[in-house]
Amino acid sequence: MMSRLFSVLLLALLALPAAAKIVEEIDHIVAVVNDDVITATELERQLRMIKTRLQRQQTRLPPDPVLRKQVLDQMIMEQLQLQEAARIGIRIDDETVNRVIAGIARDNNLTLEQFRQVLTRDGFDFASYREQIRNSLTINQLRKQRVESRIHVSEREVANYLTNQANRKGHDDDYHLAHILIALPEAASPEQIAAARRKAEAIHQRLEAGADFTQTAIAESNAPDALQGGDLGWRKAGQLPTLFADVVRKLQPGQISEVIRSPSGFHIVKLLDRRSREERHVVQQTLARHILIKPDEMTSSEAAHAELLRIRERLEAGADFGEIARAVSDDTASAAQGGSLGWVNPGTMVPRFEEEMNKLQPGQISEPFQTRFGWHIVQVMARRQHDDTKAWEQQQARRLIAKRKIDIALHNWLRELRSTAYVEYRLNQ
Picture 1 (cartoon, rainbow, N blue to C red):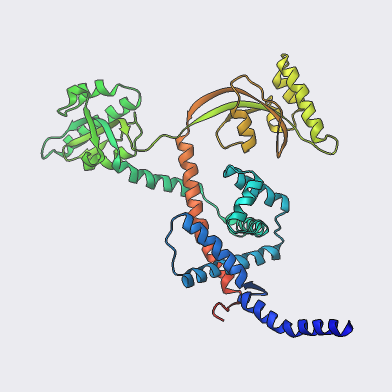
Picture 2 (picture 1 turned 90 degrees about the horizontal axis):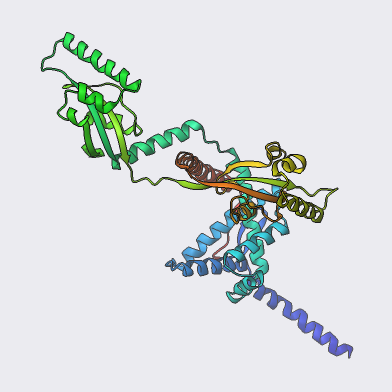
C-alpha cells in the first residue's frame, strides 16, 4: 500500500515541471508595469472584449499583432493610473459598483440576472466584468482629482468664445434692415460735412429717445427708399454693404447703429429682424415646492416616510404647504421660502426627484419618495415654456472650453505618468 502511494506521489512530482512549463506557456508575463505585471491571459481576455465590441459596431479590425499591441498599451496606461489611485487612497466600494452595473442592465432593458446571462453567453466572466467596472470608476475619480478639478474656465473665455461663434454664424443669417441717409454732395466742403454730421447725430439722439424710425426716415432721409420708411428689405449677410456688415451683425432686432460715415454721407441703420439657422433652446420650466425629511440617528428612514405620509394627508385636507414646509422641512434654504424651489430647469434636480416631479399636474402633490438627500414630497405649482437660449449657449461654451482644456491637461498628465514609470514589454517573448 505504501509502495503504491509512494509511486503515485513520485509520478506527480515528476510531472510538476512539465505542468509548470505548460502553465508558463499558457499564462506568461507580457508586460511589467512598475511593481505589477500584465499576463497573457489578462491581455487575451481584454482583446476578446474589445474585438467583440468593435465587431458589433461593424468596425473593420486591424491585424491581430497591431490590435494586440494597442490593447496592451491601453492596459499599461490603465495599470499606471490604478497604481496612482491606490497610492493616494482612492477606493470604489462594492455598493457603488453594484449600482452602476444595475444601471447598465436597466439601460439595456435587462434585469441584473438577465445581464449576467448575456455576459456569460458572450464568453465573459461576471466577476472580471465587475472588476473592470470598478477600475473604470477608479480611473474616472482619479482623473477628476488630478486633472478636471484643476481646470478653470473664466467668464472672459466664455464671452470670447460666444463672440467668435456669433461672428461665424452671422455669415449665414438673413437681415431685415431700414436706414436713414443724410447725404453729402460730391466734393463736399468741411462745413457741409460738419453740418451733415450734426444733423445725423441729432436724428440719432431723437431715435434713441424714442422717435419712430419709419416716420423719421420718411421725413429726414435722403435715400431713394425714404418713402418706404427707409426699409431695405431682407438681405443675405453676403449682400450687405461692406460698410454695414460688421455693424449689423452686432445688433439685436430693434436696435439702431451709431452714425456711420460713407462717401455718400452719414447713415443710421436699424435691424428690424433677423433670420438665423440657429435653433432657439426652449425648455419647460416647473414651478415647484417640496418638503424634505432627512433620516438621522433620531429618525429612521421608515419614520421619515411615515411622517411625510401624515403631512401629505394634512395638505390634501387643506393645510397650508408653505407653513408646514417652514416648520418641518430639513431643506433649510427652501424651507425659508415655504418650500419653494423657484422655476426649475430640466436636469437641475437629481433624477429621481425630477422623475416624480414630472409625473404631476399643476396643483398635485406627490406621494413620498426617497433620494440620496432623504424623503420628499413635492408639489407642482405651474409650468411654462422658457427661452433658455442665452444661458444654454453659455453653458455649452463653458463645457466645450473645459473639454478642450481637460483633453490637453489629461494628455500631458498621462505622458508624465508614463515617462516616470518603469515599463518592460515581453509581448514577443
